[in-house]
Image (tube, rainbow, N blue to C red; front, side):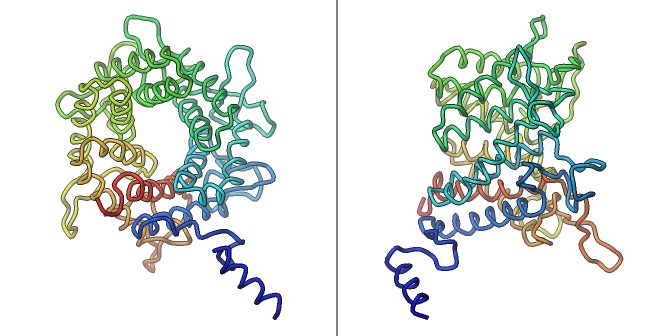
Length: 408
């Protein structure tokens, strides 16, 4: 009993939370709305850790429920793309304040370390494969330039969080590989896949432009800025639908455009435009980003019966979070983006109301499929969706605390 009272007194003096692993209340510095969303982000991130992660092997399952109890079995291993989103979810938690960084640091750094199981050691470039090996550095198979953009981005994010130069140098080395994918022909653009150079995709160009622009700042190297501008201009001129400023998916080597449209492609170009505006001061980049932001809102958000807000038609949480992140960056210069963000927020909150077994559905409007009794069927839930839902709430928390602020 005496020990318990001593602990309570120490807790009061030091301002820690008893029963909270001796840590200060990391939510205390946040305003009410930011704290609510931060708690959801941490909750969902923790659910990903519990349901998909095996720390001893630095291994992430692709689906929940898992098909097997080890690393074998059909589709049991996360591909590089969804694995990267878990790292991104950790990064977003870390951006919410020092307490959050301390809370997530161990899991965050272990997931960064786990990238090495996707790495193919080569004599020419530092690159990562789409599939995981059971041994560090022995990954084989196709290498996608867009996968490597996301991975390079996460090492750059980690550098900005922890200040460790190794992370920055890894990001730069992977970016060198991405730049090697630029097609030196009349068409131009960065290919999608190194082994199958059949198309040049928005997903391998738009986020590369943003990555290169950020690297130009981190490395104080204008070469990366020149590359960022070159890739941005190519994507804008080649893959933008001029009727609505939303971006198509890809162009083939023969010049045929695949006109699919995905939220993350347009989001990546909006974010790249905002970043180039910040660096260069050229108004055209902000104007183009603003036009695409309005185009995206009109394209993916529609009025539906029974809802007092426009509902989203895209059912991929990871695609969507890149659009949200872009709108958050745009809001700093275009307050009109608040309308887009608040509509997005309403959709995300609706999806959270359908939380089942610690996970959210990927479709934020219709929710889970149901069994004969009307119960939610939580089956084959992709870690990409689960981690992205966590990042979505973290992004809203970041917006309401650090961008919009409580009283603005």
